Length: 142
Image (tube, rainbow, N blue to C red; front, side, top):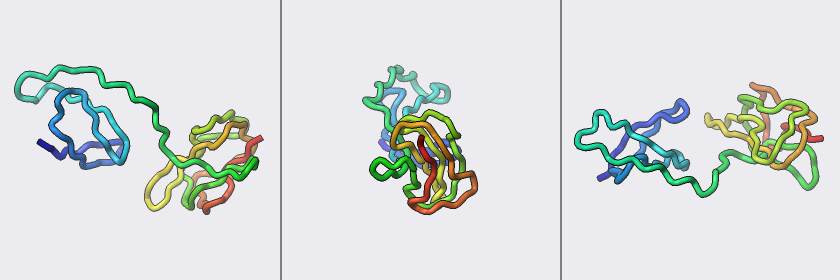
């Protein structure tokens, strides 16, 4: 039996459809991301179902867009146009691949822009509220 439930994830409400789960906790998929859900036994009629630990994910999935680089260039560029919501790095920060550089709002959606390579931040060319085009420089590495 399938059920539709309304869930709140990161301040946004979503309607999700789930099968009657055979065990708790169970996993649902919201906007393409698997989320483990536990249900409080209070308010559930009948005996509570046994709880089993959720299986460990095979590999952590990094969510976001990767900044653009060309060949050995030390400039990380915006992969798409939008408005900078926040900047997560500052000059002299040591950064690794997949570290968040900034959050970019485009078409009323926020996207994390991630590092494409390792390095030390030498310059930050963006600030919150600034509009950027695809290919505009975000940061420079040393």
